[in-house]
Amino acid sequence: MKPIYKIWTAYILLIIFMIIAGTSYGQIVVTHFNAEWNELNKTEWVDELEKCEITHVQCPEKIKKHKVKVLPTIIVFKDGEEIYRFEADLSFKIAATKEELQEYVNELVKDVH
Image 1 (cartoon, rainbow, N blue to C red):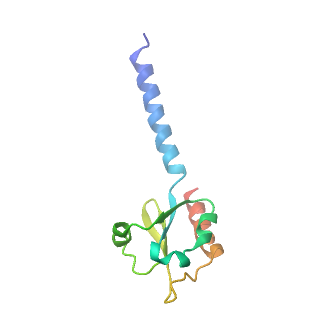
Image 2: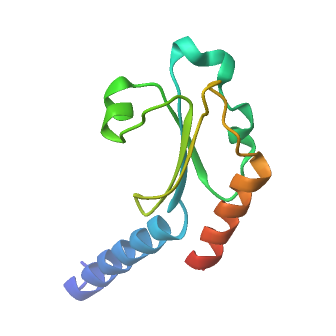
């Protein structure tokens, strides 16, 4: 039977690894809010962004929770906190470009590392 301190040491090391792994990636999340009725205006290039996690939301409860007033809207979160918000104009299209949004993400990634 292994001594108890070896078991606890392995357990603590595992917890530390999980904490480090959880904070090293996934801190920057780009969320694309849209609705089924507005699919023609979805921002398709969002899925091409790099160095971030990408989510798509069509759930009315989540749209309301994040106080999204116009669709589509793209929100960039860092550690769960909203950092940038890009909203559509009256034509229901987002004026921001993929390159512009990628620059924001790259800036946030630099701050993390």
